[in-house]
Amino acid sequence: MREIETKYRVRDLEALLVALKEAGVKVSDPVHQDDLAYAPRGWDPSQGKLGFTFARLRTQDGEHVVTTKTPTATAMECVEHETTVADREAMHGVLTSLGYVPNVRIAKTRRGGRAGEVSVCVDEVEGAGVFLELEILVDDDRDGRAAQDDLDAWARNLGVDLERTTDTYDILVRPSP
Figure 1 (cartoon, helix red, strand yellow):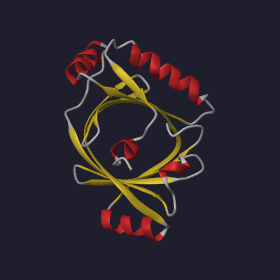
Figure 2: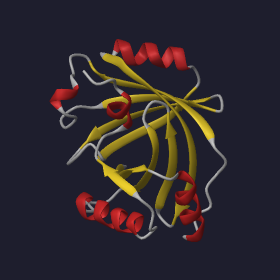
Figure 3: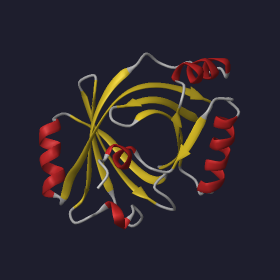
Figure 4: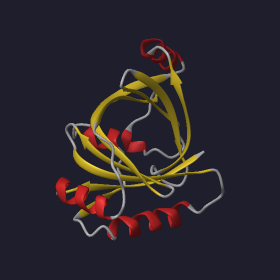
């Protein structure tokens, strides 16, 4: 599967929640996600993400999920593989033995919902702020940039103050050098 997404910094969380409700999006109760992001050994953020595969180990409600993401055209368009794992520490060992290095922890509270094929996430990310993330999963050759333009148009129709960002959470929470 290929994940195509857009992400926005949110200035007014309550205004966003009202706008989503008016748009027919029912958001879930907040859940806590504890993510550990992994990068290939030797990778540095100055290299960008294209040409590399990254991993994430997430715990939510006692369930552990490992995900790999390989950016294609941009960091917001990735080939994605994901599965549940029984033991977080064992999976950490697998990832590090494969040459991945834990590079940043991302803790967030997430509310999720759907608007047709679009997954809608409202994230309160520790150390980074509040974000709206729109995502579709596709298994076809859909043009990623065109899909992102469609997602952006949907976000802009909400009528709330949003600042689009192309940075992923692992970059947004990383301390400045």
